[in-house]
Length: 397
Image 1 (cartoon, rainbow, N blue to C red):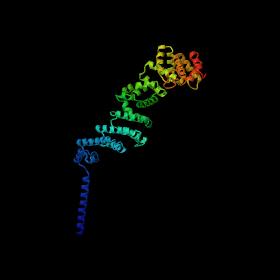
Image 2: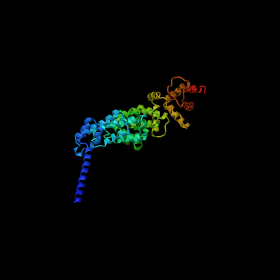
Image 3: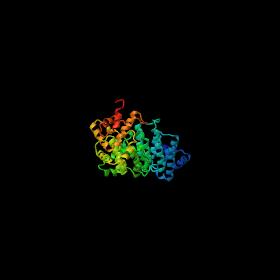
Image 4: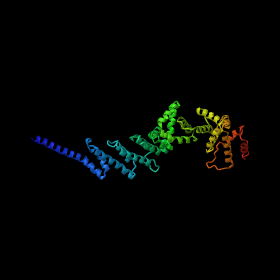
Protein backbone atom coordinates (compact mmCIF):
# COMPACT_ATOMS: atom_id res chain seq x y z
CA UNK A 1 0.00 0.00 0.00
CA UNK A 2 2.83 2.32 0.89
CA UNK A 3 4.47 1.61 -2.41
CA UNK A 4 1.24 2.48 -4.24
CA UNK A 5 1.02 5.93 -2.66
CA UNK A 6 4.69 6.46 -3.33
CA UNK A 7 4.17 5.83 -7.03
CA UNK A 8 1.14 8.15 -7.11
CA UNK A 9 3.09 10.87 -5.38
CA UNK A 10 5.95 10.49 -7.83
CA UNK A 11 3.64 10.72 -10.84
CA UNK A 12 1.94 13.79 -9.39
CA UNK A 13 5.26 15.48 -8.71
CA UNK A 14 6.46 14.69 -12.22
CA UNK A 15 3.24 16.12 -13.67
CA UNK A 16 3.66 19.32 -11.69
CA UNK A 17 7.26 19.71 -12.84
CA UNK A 18 6.34 19.04 -16.48
CA UNK A 19 3.51 21.53 -16.31
CA UNK A 20 5.87 24.04 -14.80
CA UNK A 21 8.44 23.47 -17.51
CA UNK A 22 5.80 23.59 -20.25
CA UNK A 23 4.42 26.80 -18.82
CA UNK A 24 7.92 28.26 -18.81
CA UNK A 25 8.52 27.28 -22.42
CA UNK A 26 5.19 28.72 -23.52
CA UNK A 27 5.92 31.90 -21.64
CA UNK A 28 9.10 32.32 -23.75
CA UNK A 29 7.36 31.78 -27.08
CA UNK A 30 5.73 34.79 -28.73
CA UNK A 31 2.36 34.65 -30.45
CA UNK A 32 1.30 36.56 -33.54
CA UNK A 33 -0.41 39.04 -31.18
CA UNK A 34 2.88 39.59 -29.40
CA UNK A 35 4.63 40.27 -32.71
CA UNK A 36 1.89 42.70 -33.74
CA UNK A 37 2.39 44.58 -30.49
CA UNK A 38 6.14 44.73 -31.07
CA UNK A 39 5.64 46.02 -34.60
CA UNK A 40 3.24 48.72 -33.41
CA UNK A 41 5.76 49.74 -30.75
CA UNK A 42 8.67 49.76 -33.22
CA UNK A 43 10.55 47.15 -31.18
CA UNK A 44 12.30 45.74 -34.25
CA UNK A 45 15.11 43.86 -32.49
CA UNK A 46 12.84 41.96 -30.12
CA UNK A 47 10.50 41.26 -33.02
CA UNK A 48 13.35 39.79 -35.07
CA UNK A 49 14.52 37.72 -32.10
CA UNK A 50 11.10 36.06 -31.90
CA UNK A 51 9.87 36.22 -35.51
CA UNK A 52 10.25 32.47 -35.95
CA UNK A 53 8.40 31.58 -32.78
CA UNK A 54 5.41 31.45 -35.10
CA UNK A 55 4.70 27.99 -36.50
CA UNK A 56 5.50 27.60 -40.24
CA UNK A 57 1.86 27.11 -41.20
CA UNK A 58 1.01 30.46 -39.59
CA UNK A 59 3.71 32.48 -41.39
CA UNK A 60 1.25 34.05 -43.78
CA UNK A 61 1.36 37.29 -45.78
CA UNK A 62 0.59 39.31 -42.66
CA UNK A 63 3.57 37.80 -40.84
CA UNK A 64 5.69 38.30 -43.94
CA UNK A 65 4.77 42.00 -44.16
CA UNK A 66 5.61 42.56 -40.47
CA UNK A 67 8.94 40.73 -40.82
CA UNK A 68 9.89 42.85 -43.84
CA UNK A 69 8.94 46.10 -42.10
CA UNK A 70 10.88 45.23 -38.92
CA UNK A 71 13.99 44.10 -40.82
CA UNK A 72 13.97 47.27 -42.91
CA UNK A 73 13.51 49.40 -39.79
CA UNK A 74 16.45 47.62 -38.14
CA UNK A 75 18.70 48.60 -41.05
CA UNK A 76 17.24 52.12 -41.33
CA UNK A 77 17.97 52.80 -37.67
CA UNK A 78 21.54 51.51 -38.08
CA UNK A 79 22.04 53.89 -41.01
CA UNK A 80 20.50 56.73 -39.01
CA UNK A 81 22.97 56.04 -36.17
CA UNK A 82 25.79 55.60 -38.71
CA UNK A 83 26.48 52.28 -37.07
CA UNK A 84 28.76 50.64 -39.63
CA UNK A 85 30.34 47.97 -37.47
CA UNK A 86 31.13 44.36 -38.28
CA UNK A 87 28.49 43.22 -35.79
CA UNK A 88 25.64 45.10 -37.51
CA UNK A 89 26.93 44.25 -40.98
CA UNK A 90 27.12 40.56 -40.08
CA UNK A 91 23.58 40.57 -38.70
CA UNK A 92 22.20 42.26 -41.81
CA UNK A 93 23.87 39.62 -43.96
CA UNK A 94 22.39 36.96 -41.68
CA UNK A 95 18.91 38.43 -42.19
CA UNK A 96 19.39 38.04 -45.94
CA UNK A 97 19.39 34.26 -45.47
CA UNK A 98 16.00 34.23 -43.69
CA UNK A 99 12.91 32.72 -45.20
CA UNK A 100 10.71 35.63 -46.07
CA UNK A 101 13.57 38.09 -46.62
CA UNK A 102 15.84 36.44 -49.18
CA UNK A 103 13.34 37.23 -51.96
CA UNK A 104 12.06 40.53 -50.55
CA UNK A 105 12.98 43.32 -52.98
CA UNK A 106 12.40 46.10 -50.46
CA UNK A 107 14.62 44.44 -47.86
CA UNK A 108 17.17 43.65 -50.55
CA UNK A 109 17.33 47.32 -51.56
CA UNK A 110 17.83 48.45 -47.96
CA UNK A 111 20.47 45.77 -47.38
CA UNK A 112 22.35 46.92 -50.50
CA UNK A 113 22.15 50.53 -49.31
CA UNK A 114 23.58 49.63 -45.91
CA UNK A 115 26.30 47.45 -47.42
CA UNK A 116 27.51 50.18 -49.76
CA UNK A 117 27.60 52.69 -46.90
CA UNK A 118 29.39 50.15 -44.72
CA UNK A 119 32.17 49.63 -47.25
CA UNK A 120 32.34 53.36 -47.99
CA UNK A 121 32.99 54.08 -44.32
CA UNK A 122 35.44 51.22 -43.94
CA UNK A 123 37.53 52.20 -46.96
CA UNK A 124 38.20 55.61 -45.45
CA UNK A 125 41.65 55.99 -43.96
CA UNK A 126 40.19 57.25 -40.71
CA UNK A 127 38.23 54.06 -40.08
CA UNK A 128 40.11 50.87 -39.24
CA UNK A 129 37.55 48.27 -38.22
CA UNK A 130 39.19 45.39 -40.09
CA UNK A 131 42.34 44.49 -41.99
CA UNK A 132 42.61 45.29 -45.73
CA UNK A 133 42.44 41.56 -46.47
CA UNK A 134 39.38 41.17 -44.27
CA UNK A 135 37.69 44.12 -45.93
CA UNK A 136 38.40 42.71 -49.38
CA UNK A 137 36.97 39.31 -48.49
CA UNK A 138 33.88 40.89 -46.93
CA UNK A 139 33.29 43.04 -50.03
CA UNK A 140 33.74 40.13 -52.45
CA UNK A 141 31.40 37.91 -50.40
CA UNK A 142 28.87 40.73 -50.12
CA UNK A 143 28.64 40.90 -53.91
CA UNK A 144 28.59 37.10 -54.26
CA UNK A 145 25.63 36.98 -51.86
CA UNK A 146 23.78 39.84 -53.57
CA UNK A 147 20.56 38.58 -55.22
CA UNK A 148 19.48 39.76 -58.67
CA UNK A 149 22.91 40.95 -59.77
CA UNK A 150 21.65 41.95 -63.20
CA UNK A 151 19.12 44.32 -61.65
CA UNK A 152 21.64 45.50 -59.04
CA UNK A 153 24.52 46.05 -61.49
CA UNK A 154 25.00 49.61 -60.22
CA UNK A 155 25.90 48.19 -56.79
CA UNK A 156 28.71 46.11 -58.28
CA UNK A 157 30.03 49.11 -60.19
CA UNK A 158 29.95 51.29 -57.06
CA UNK A 159 31.80 48.62 -55.06
CA UNK A 160 34.48 48.50 -57.76
CA UNK A 161 34.71 52.29 -57.72
CA UNK A 162 35.16 52.20 -53.95
CA UNK A 163 38.14 49.90 -54.44
CA UNK A 164 39.58 52.03 -57.25
CA UNK A 165 42.58 53.01 -55.15
CA UNK A 166 42.92 49.49 -53.84
CA UNK A 167 42.29 47.41 -56.96
CA UNK A 168 45.63 45.70 -56.43
CA UNK A 169 44.02 44.06 -53.39
CA UNK A 170 41.49 42.37 -55.67
CA UNK A 171 42.26 39.51 -58.00
CA UNK A 172 41.32 40.49 -61.53
CA UNK A 173 38.55 37.89 -61.61
CA UNK A 174 37.08 39.41 -58.44
CA UNK A 175 37.21 42.92 -59.91
CA UNK A 176 35.72 41.73 -63.22
CA UNK A 177 32.88 39.97 -61.40
CA UNK A 178 32.01 43.27 -59.68
CA UNK A 179 31.59 45.15 -62.95
CA UNK A 180 30.49 42.39 -65.34
CA UNK A 181 26.75 42.96 -64.96
CA UNK A 182 27.22 46.72 -65.32
CA UNK A 183 29.29 46.58 -68.50
CA UNK A 184 26.73 44.14 -69.92
CA UNK A 185 23.82 46.46 -69.15
CA UNK A 186 21.98 48.79 -71.52
CA UNK A 187 23.35 51.78 -69.62
CA UNK A 188 26.96 50.59 -69.79
CA UNK A 189 27.88 53.83 -71.55
CA UNK A 190 27.66 55.58 -68.18
CA UNK A 191 30.09 53.18 -66.52
CA UNK A 192 32.62 52.17 -69.16
CA UNK A 193 34.34 55.55 -69.54
CA UNK A 194 35.22 55.80 -65.84
CA UNK A 195 38.94 55.35 -65.21
CA UNK A 196 38.76 52.57 -62.56
CA UNK A 197 36.25 50.60 -64.64
CA UNK A 198 38.26 51.18 -67.81
CA UNK A 199 41.34 49.75 -66.10
CA UNK A 200 39.51 46.51 -65.29
CA UNK A 201 38.00 46.33 -68.79
CA UNK A 202 41.39 46.77 -70.48
CA UNK A 203 42.87 44.00 -68.35
CA UNK A 204 39.99 41.73 -69.34
CA UNK A 205 40.46 42.59 -73.01
CA UNK A 206 44.18 41.75 -72.71
CA UNK A 207 43.18 38.32 -71.38
CA UNK A 208 40.73 37.86 -74.26
CA UNK A 209 43.44 38.82 -76.77
CA UNK A 210 45.80 36.22 -75.26
CA UNK A 211 43.08 33.56 -75.39
CA UNK A 212 41.60 33.99 -78.86
CA UNK A 213 43.51 32.75 -81.88
CA UNK A 214 42.17 34.99 -84.63
CA UNK A 215 40.54 38.38 -85.11
CA UNK A 216 37.08 36.98 -85.80
CA UNK A 217 36.99 35.09 -82.49
CA UNK A 218 38.45 38.10 -80.70
CA UNK A 219 35.79 40.41 -82.14
CA UNK A 220 32.99 38.08 -81.01
CA UNK A 221 34.46 37.67 -77.51
CA UNK A 222 34.79 41.42 -76.98
CA UNK A 223 31.21 41.98 -78.10
CA UNK A 224 30.04 39.24 -75.72
CA UNK A 225 31.96 40.77 -72.81
CA UNK A 226 30.84 44.37 -73.38
CA UNK A 227 27.38 45.61 -74.34
CA UNK A 228 26.95 47.92 -77.33
CA UNK A 229 26.29 50.78 -74.90
CA UNK A 230 29.48 50.02 -72.99
CA UNK A 231 31.51 49.93 -76.20
CA UNK A 232 30.03 53.29 -77.14
CA UNK A 233 31.10 54.77 -73.81
CA UNK A 234 34.49 53.09 -74.06
CA UNK A 235 35.36 54.50 -77.48
CA UNK A 236 36.48 58.02 -76.39
CA UNK A 237 38.67 56.51 -73.66
CA UNK A 238 40.23 54.10 -76.14
CA UNK A 239 40.98 56.94 -78.54
CA UNK A 240 42.57 58.89 -75.70
CA UNK A 241 44.65 55.79 -74.96
CA UNK A 242 46.10 56.06 -78.48
CA UNK A 243 48.17 58.92 -77.07
CA UNK A 244 49.20 56.96 -73.97
CA UNK A 245 52.89 56.39 -73.28
CA UNK A 246 52.02 52.95 -71.89
CA UNK A 247 52.79 50.62 -74.84
CA UNK A 248 50.43 47.87 -73.67
CA UNK A 249 47.48 50.24 -73.26
CA UNK A 250 48.41 51.94 -76.51
CA UNK A 251 48.42 48.72 -78.56
CA UNK A 252 45.38 47.16 -76.88
CA UNK A 253 43.32 50.29 -77.52
CA UNK A 254 44.27 50.30 -81.19
CA UNK A 255 43.53 46.59 -81.54
CA UNK A 256 40.03 46.97 -80.09
CA UNK A 257 39.19 50.10 -82.07
CA UNK A 258 40.31 48.45 -85.30
CA UNK A 259 38.46 45.19 -84.70
CA UNK A 260 35.22 46.98 -83.87
CA UNK A 261 35.55 49.46 -86.76
CA UNK A 262 35.61 52.40 -84.37
CA UNK A 263 38.69 54.14 -85.75
CA UNK A 264 38.95 56.47 -88.74
CA UNK A 265 41.75 56.36 -91.36
CA UNK A 266 43.02 59.68 -89.96
CA UNK A 267 43.28 58.18 -86.48
CA UNK A 268 45.04 55.14 -87.90
CA UNK A 269 47.65 57.40 -89.49
CA UNK A 270 48.27 59.03 -86.11
CA UNK A 271 48.52 55.68 -84.32
CA UNK A 272 51.10 54.26 -86.71
CA UNK A 273 53.16 57.46 -86.63
CA UNK A 274 53.15 57.37 -82.83
CA UNK A 275 54.06 53.70 -82.88
CA UNK A 276 57.16 54.44 -84.95
CA UNK A 277 58.17 57.56 -83.03
CA UNK A 278 57.92 55.90 -79.62
CA UNK A 279 60.37 53.18 -80.56
CA UNK A 280 58.69 50.24 -82.25
CA UNK A 281 59.39 46.55 -81.83
CA UNK A 282 59.20 44.00 -84.62
CA UNK A 283 55.89 42.32 -85.30
CA UNK A 284 52.63 42.65 -87.20
CA UNK A 285 51.96 46.21 -86.06
CA UNK A 286 55.51 47.26 -86.98
CA UNK A 287 55.02 46.04 -90.55
CA UNK A 288 51.69 47.87 -90.83
CA UNK A 289 53.23 51.03 -89.33
CA UNK A 290 56.17 50.96 -91.76
CA UNK A 291 53.79 50.60 -94.72
CA UNK A 292 51.59 53.46 -93.44
CA UNK A 293 54.61 55.75 -92.99
CA UNK A 294 55.67 55.09 -96.58
CA UNK A 295 52.14 55.97 -97.68
CA UNK A 296 52.25 59.19 -95.64
CA UNK A 297 55.42 60.17 -97.47
CA UNK A 298 53.39 60.32 -100.68
CA UNK A 299 50.45 62.28 -99.28
CA UNK A 300 51.08 65.81 -97.99
CA UNK A 301 47.55 66.43 -96.70
CA UNK A 302 47.66 63.29 -94.55
CA UNK A 303 51.02 64.38 -93.13
CA UNK A 304 49.55 67.78 -92.25
CA UNK A 305 46.77 66.08 -90.30
CA UNK A 306 49.21 63.85 -88.42
CA UNK A 307 51.55 66.73 -87.63
CA UNK A 308 48.65 68.77 -86.29
CA UNK A 309 48.03 66.07 -83.66
CA UNK A 310 51.70 65.30 -82.92
CA UNK A 311 52.48 68.97 -82.27
CA UNK A 312 49.93 68.99 -79.42
CA UNK A 313 51.74 66.29 -77.46
CA UNK A 314 53.91 67.15 -74.47
CA UNK A 315 56.41 65.64 -74.24
CA UNK A 316 56.96 64.83 -77.89
CA UNK A 317 57.34 61.12 -78.70
CA UNK A 318 61.02 60.35 -79.16
CA UNK A 319 61.78 56.81 -78.02
CA UNK A 320 62.88 55.98 -81.57
CA UNK A 321 65.92 58.26 -81.16
CA UNK A 322 67.11 56.46 -78.04
CA UNK A 323 68.47 52.99 -77.45
CA UNK A 324 71.64 50.97 -77.66
CA UNK A 325 71.36 50.08 -81.36
CA UNK A 326 72.80 53.04 -83.32
CA UNK A 327 72.31 51.35 -86.70
CA UNK A 328 68.64 50.68 -85.99
CA UNK A 329 68.18 54.26 -84.78
CA UNK A 330 69.76 55.54 -87.99
CA UNK A 331 67.49 53.36 -90.14
CA UNK A 332 64.40 54.67 -88.33
CA UNK A 333 65.60 58.27 -88.65
CA UNK A 334 66.05 57.72 -92.40
CA UNK A 335 62.49 56.37 -92.64
CA UNK A 336 61.05 59.37 -90.80
CA UNK A 337 63.07 61.84 -92.87
CA UNK A 338 61.53 60.42 -96.05
CA UNK A 339 57.97 59.95 -94.81
CA UNK A 340 57.40 62.58 -92.10
CA UNK A 341 60.24 65.12 -92.42
CA UNK A 342 58.11 67.84 -90.84
CA UNK A 343 58.29 66.03 -87.51
CA UNK A 344 62.09 65.97 -87.44
CA UNK A 345 62.25 69.72 -87.99
CA UNK A 346 59.53 70.34 -85.39
CA UNK A 347 61.35 68.19 -82.85
CA UNK A 348 64.73 69.80 -83.55
CA UNK A 349 63.34 73.34 -83.35
CA UNK A 350 61.42 72.61 -80.13
CA UNK A 351 64.53 71.09 -78.58
CA UNK A 352 66.66 74.13 -79.45
CA UNK A 353 64.01 76.59 -78.22
CA UNK A 354 63.91 74.78 -74.89
CA UNK A 355 67.70 74.74 -74.54
CA UNK A 356 67.89 78.44 -75.44
CA UNK A 357 65.02 79.43 -73.15
CA UNK A 358 62.76 80.59 -75.96
CA UNK A 359 59.06 80.11 -75.40
CA UNK A 360 57.13 78.63 -72.48
CA UNK A 361 57.38 75.02 -71.36
CA UNK A 362 55.08 74.55 -68.33
CA UNK A 363 55.73 70.80 -68.16
CA UNK A 364 59.49 71.03 -68.45
CA UNK A 365 61.58 69.63 -71.27
CA UNK A 366 59.27 68.42 -74.08
CA UNK A 367 62.17 66.77 -75.96
CA UNK A 368 63.73 64.33 -73.51
CA UNK A 369 65.89 62.67 -76.16
CA UNK A 370 67.17 65.96 -77.61
CA UNK A 371 70.90 65.20 -77.52
CA UNK A 372 70.41 61.60 -78.70
CA UNK A 373 68.30 62.99 -81.52
CA UNK A 374 71.03 65.37 -82.71
CA UNK A 375 73.70 62.66 -82.61
CA UNK A 376 71.77 61.04 -85.47
CA UNK A 377 70.31 64.16 -87.08
CA UNK A 378 73.74 65.78 -87.53
CA UNK A 379 74.71 62.95 -89.89
CA UNK A 380 71.42 62.88 -91.78
CA UNK A 381 71.79 63.94 -95.42
CA UNK A 382 68.28 65.44 -95.48
CA UNK A 383 68.77 67.37 -92.22
CA UNK A 384 68.05 71.10 -91.94
CA UNK A 385 71.53 72.64 -92.00
CA UNK A 386 70.44 75.79 -90.16
CA UNK A 387 69.12 73.74 -87.22
CA UNK A 388 72.31 71.66 -87.06
CA UNK A 389 74.40 74.84 -87.09
CA UNK A 390 72.30 76.34 -84.32
CA UNK A 391 72.77 73.21 -82.20
CA UNK A 392 76.54 73.10 -82.75
CA UNK A 393 76.93 76.82 -82.03
CA UNK A 394 75.58 76.53 -78.51
CA UNK A 395 78.22 77.33 -75.82
CA UNK A 396 78.65 73.75 -74.66
CA UNK A 397 79.92 72.87 -78.12
